[in-house]
Amino acid sequence: MLNAVTQIGLPRRGVFVIERRGESTVIDTNTALMLGPDDEYRVAHPTGDGDEGTVLALPLDLVEDAVGRVEGRVGNLGPRDHLAVCVVDRALRDAGADQLEAEEAMLLLLGLLSRAFADTGNDHRTLGPGQRLRIERARALLASAPTDRWDLGALGRALRCSPFHLARQFRTATGETISRYALRLRLAVALERLAKGERDIAALAVDTGFSHHSHFSARFRSVFGITPTEAREILTQRKLEELRSLLARHESAEDG
Image (cartoon, rainbow, N blue to C red; front, side):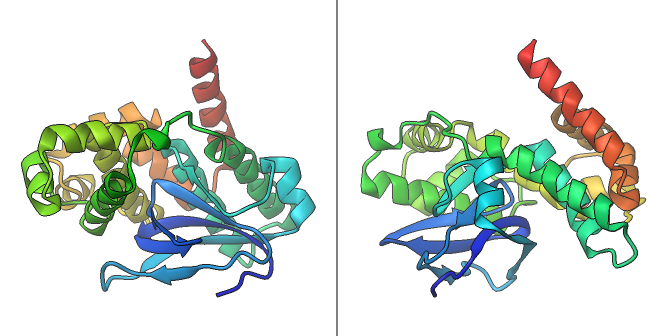
């Protein structure tokens, strides 16, 4: 497939694999994908569930101003970035939304993506081709069943690799632990449910693999800085100002 415009793909559910220049990369809810004009690629789905996401088709100069160089690459989508994707998606899809509000929402998201596509500093060159392939397979397994309660032993057996080497290589490739990566996948599932107005937090906790309501709420707040109920209000009512405030607090905490 040949890409004709600059696109940024932001998955909200599911997983797919993109192949470019002979290399396959797993795209899940923890990642953002950029494709430049004339990029050639192929897409495959490791599961039969498909995927769902937001695709921004944007002018080249706008993407360059916001994100930097335009080329095929994958970025790391943080939890608050994913929250912003869900809010912006609703704003763009709402036919009754104010045009300026929708455009401001998109520009807010583009600002976040400048960090997502920045160099993470992870030295992938320290891993060989076989090791990189193993990590992509691990990411595909986790994203294919994000609400399952994975353990290193099960992952290691599925990938025919010792848990020790798998954990070390995964962190080298992604910059985070397997448990943290899996947690973000589970919370992305929760965000989608909250965006659709889910009110039964206890049922949501169990459905997304948490032991109980308080465990889910505590982990959710530790990652997003707000409760599931507060997130639902931001998502369902497209409260862009509250989203901006949340993101600003997060940036201040990081700078501090």
